[in-house]
Length: 236
Image (tube, rainbow, N blue to C red; front, side, top):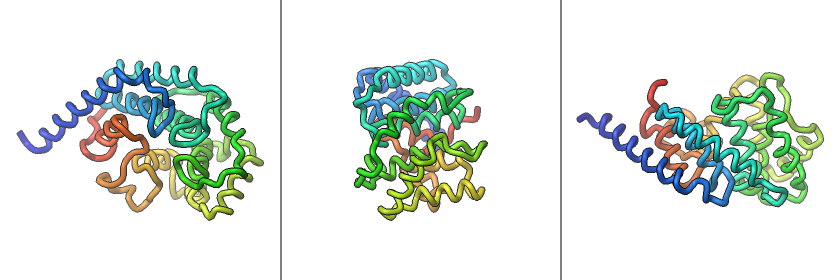
């Protein structure tokens, strides 16, 4: 047995174990967020359904997604790691990559947008991706419509964000937006690079051996196997 076949077999077994573990525990997870919760499971199962060519996992991903929408209330945090920003970013990721179909992305996410925009940007002093200004910025980037070259968010809200980001010397979102609008980077490529590496470092975009996906835990480990270069996704 060649090393490549051995690696493929080992990876398949590990993914099978992870999928069983997450199916047993997915609905009992109270955290709804992207990095440490149920939204991360959703992303794993959509990718695993494509990888394994098994519609069962796609149905399970849809069920988890419905649970998330049903469990969100007005007290849920807005941050990126465990809150609404990460959930909204993930939904757009799923739509732009063809996992979820939507004829009206703006209306589908309008309730989440309204909740997030209640977060007082001017009182944000945390600059981190997980719980602060940078994470909010990546949510805002996800709400850009590349076909119509406009955001799904009000102009005054965008102006407030970029002013606060500038005051805190955070230029990453501005730089990515410049690259998208100038044609150096497609919006879909932004999603995939950021998702795969957990940050936006263009210098590692061509390397599959570095970085890690945004999602932590077992779901993140499974996604890293499928997307991070440990094995190639089987041809569809």
